Length: 606
Image (cartoon, rainbow, N blue to C red; front, top):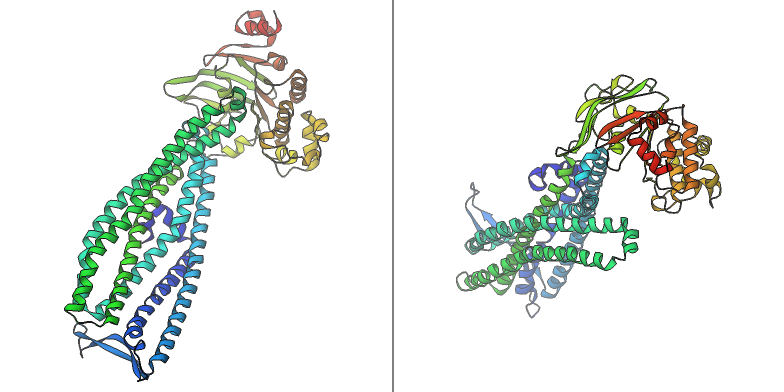
């Protein structure tokens, strides 16, 4: 049932909280039964309780009498609850019974709502965690074609829709049909023929529900897409705020965002036209039909005023849950739209993962080797072509060349952020695709040009890759990265919070923290991608000293524009247009008088 209503994907999360779901639905069912009590009180309240005088009256309610031996032959009768009671006392009694029924309905409604909120929130919490886990597991290639803001919208706006509507839908699908059924049974007891006239409106309502449901689903998808665009723009603007201020383009950005906001507004309003339009359309159909039914009840079936009032109330209570069920159907369509977008991500299979039978990689001690490696982000534009080289354990290998030559991409292939399109990469003779990702990446420390830091303490950031390390080991790593001095000058030293992306530190300080973090992991392979390209001379000198101190203790792969940081490299590879143009030591490359010599002369004035 849950699979049919919510879809099997989201239903699997709700089903995990079966006890809460059952509790909520049972309480909702009980609550809906209490709703019928007032209609049983209305007819005697009008016909008997409102009589003048003190003559005793009876408290009777409509009932059914079956003929002996048959369930299909019956007639309306009355069940006498109290044979003789004064009108005033009957009024008091009816009022008291009404109060008690309303009280119990309120209590059951309250607790069913709490139980429903609990299972909906727990289900969405589990889904939110699984979605976050999926984001973490997807390889870097997945994110090339995605906007981060749109992915944020999937995990916020779409999940908020599910959280708000799941409980409402499931409760409505129990409470509203039971309420309608109970009042319908009352109407059958009062007058079978008159009640059958109610079904005259059912085909019209069914057509409306189907039409509006389709439109609501279509428009809800468009609303969520527009919401994702707005969220993406918010995110991108916050990331580029310094750029916007620097070029004084705030007005242009506001105008661009206004267009996105206007698009979202139009889509929401279009969705609302269909979402809100169903109720009035159904009201119109019922308004045209119900007066005729009640007039027929008075003229042809000779009902009393109290009976007609009770039946009119019952008619309205049959129609009300049917109307709400129609809106529940709209909500189901909205859920299906949101679920489709979320589970499109959940069902994505990571293209970088352990192969079956993958083994742990032993500690690196021989060589890293590229053999005929080709790679491209898309088939149309190859980035690396026939890359082959070998770096022995403990050596420092540097990669230089023009911007966009493929140097950083080459480094990204070693920890399998991406997989090669052709050829192979081996560590100590083992293809990196044959070992577990965990064992591979545990041996690699990465320092990027754009230092990635958390809005946390210095201690937290250095320990990020190895939280089990002691404070003494953290300090040792910081000293090795020439970061300990500036850390001790901070207000709270290692417990100082560094702001979003380390905004409270200088570029050189952030870079040295990243190096300390990589050192603390104790990697056999250290990769530095433009680690000093954006630093001042003093900071560059400290970073360079940190790198030189590590030389010989681990294999170092370094990408650099500033040749001063790689002068002590054992081998230098010049990459141009995705190919290795030349390689050798610094002196060998200078003597070749090739591309490296050109780069060297440009920087050092040859």
